[in-house]
Amino acid sequence: MSWLDKLEKRFGFLAIPGLIRAVVLFNVLVLGLVWLNPSFSSAIDLNPARILHGQVWRLVTYIFIPQTFSWWVVLFLWFLWFIGDGLERAWGAFKLTLYFFVGMIGTTIAAFFFGSNFSNSMLISSLFFAFARFYPDVVIYLFFILPVKIKWLAWFSAGVLLVGFVLGPNAYRVSLIAALSNYFIFFGPQIIHDARHRREITARRQRFEVESRGEAESLHKCAVCGATELSDPNLDFRVARDGEEYCVPHLPGAQTAATPAQDRHPPSAV
Image (cartoon, rainbow, N blue to C red; front, top):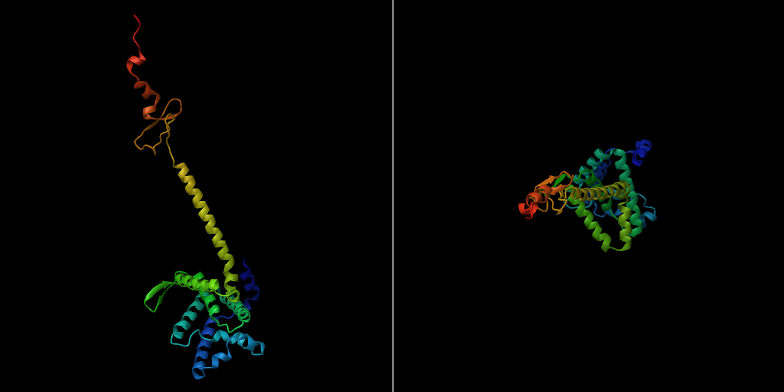
């Protein structure tokens, strides 16, 4: 039983079924409030300075701010709903709830460390990466035209984050790790196990190929000249009475037959 299963057995009552659907619905609500009052999002974002001054609701409300306020928000919220349902099917409500709240804690730590407003984009990215682990071959259509597998989008997103990690300052690097801590906690051990397993498979395959080549080097070998069926495919081989294997030209009987008659029976002296 894994540590997640043990936690679920003990704290499963804390699960929130349909959590991501609720997040999407609150995103829609915030979208409407921002449409009525464009400054509303600044009152609920993750701002460490204002949190320290008592506005503690920001520790939760920032997750309800949409990633965009353009018409693309419709696709974004649909996709968030889609991956949330997929993760709840794969994990169950408790594990998804735990994953989400661990991500919130990591994002909050990142916000305080980074010293500036920190959006929920990393939290959404962690959900996307988790979905890609469970459903790598699911196909979506970019711009309703281009079919792309989820795993390739995940690799592209990871590449973008990696560039930021390499080129960004140390504060951003630490913040990125903290914000994606839920992914590393949940999937890190499996990633390490898979990497070791792949190395073991590669090593076994290489050993098998070496052994196969060794066994296939020759089935027949002449005891006299060392020729094999690989060095000369036209050669025939026989086993002589002495138990040794010879190519036909070097069989003991063949050598005797090839000796001139006068050499085998010299004329008698007069």
